[in-house]
Length: 244
Image (cartoon, rainbow, N blue to C red):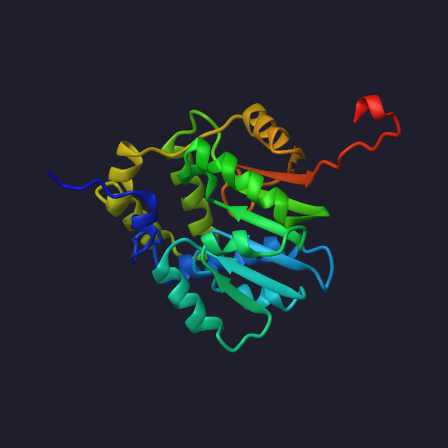
């Protein structure tokens, strides 16, 4: 009997998820520009958790003091290390390594297009971990969250619109046809993608002691998906021993 591939295995290989090299470049450039817009200061310490190949991470790192790139896939980390080994501002970590970062040391954490691949328990655990790593005035950004009942057709339309603007429409059409028969579709049907309503995401963030709001626009090209901005909730101080 064939062993079912999971999402971590899927991303630890060359995948057909990008229509072309141009699509890949434009995608990562857009995400990098969005992250740059979130960096609070030139000396900020930032973490891109689940970063993928992060082709323009050097542009992000140039706007902050240090940038951690974290990904679960060994192949992705190998490529990141090869690409940015001479950049003193960038450190590549496994997702497990993030637990070893000092608590309250990060000014910005971006988790983009990852939540859909986590189980609910994994998501809850990740939120607790990232809460510990953020400074009291730091910010967590959850990007590309998929709302319930969104149609794959909606994602396809967003890709085609992006492709039209970016000049890779023909390859995008061909890519959609390939994806219909790819491992991605098989895993999506058998394992699924996590989807959350606005209320569910806010509740999960509040349970993890964040205050949160939905951003005006999503990171990346697909505005049918959602981005959330969250900050750690500060413990309320009191002088009344009975309330301690």
